[in-house]
Length: 346
Image (tube, rainbow, N blue to C red; front, side):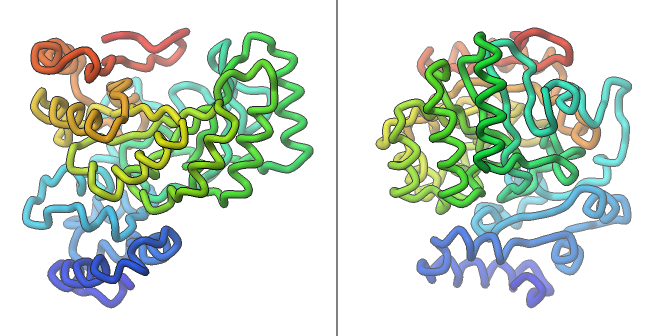
């Protein structure tokens, strides 16, 4: 698809025509196959200089048509576009605390792909694929070399043995990449295997799929995920315009299957770093029955520092937000500090 388009206008027409063909548009596989990559952005003139081109080569690009359809192409600072568009500033080290792996995940677990950073929960890297490659990703420097744990009987037994040997663990987190880009069968092997462990109270799935590829969430998958009664989903909407009929439907399927859905936003400069943007987002999340849970200050990850909002500004937004929205809508503003034993309120 993308190679056929030499101008933004032709791309816009194709997106409008494709959305009208719902049989294709509503298929997650079709969306993934039609995703734009770095060469397509260059052809469309979306990489304005050599630095942006080098950033696109250093950090891979992937944007499905669904996400492209949310962009206001007349606005060069469109908040949806900024989340996936390569920026030359990704190659700059803007402060001394930047790190490829600020939380030492590669050293935090008993074997590659498992992270045991906090005493009551373990994180399992089960996928290295994402529907959209977000430019603010915490793992943007590690994802392409990361180990994705396979849901084989041997691996499930190894993970179960480790959890049994750590009686303080009560929660298992499936992460990546995006766990919902696994096949239904592979994802459910992980979920069911972990949910069967008596000491596990919750199997948490960290995913942006409801926001960036909502057609991946089907009714059969939601019902299967809800079967154990232990699955929780944490997703990431960063801007109210990401809440669409499609994303609302994905969240509705999960919620009606008995799965609590919470949102963990990242405070991104130029995207949502205002009281108005955050209030609109929280109200939109309530309308689709998704709990606003956390707002993270952007992590000190190499390649993401141009998104970081100063702590003082984050504090002001958090304070003023309490004056505009009720407690049910109010997320916790936190910073995840390397070496800290818990998320730190700002």
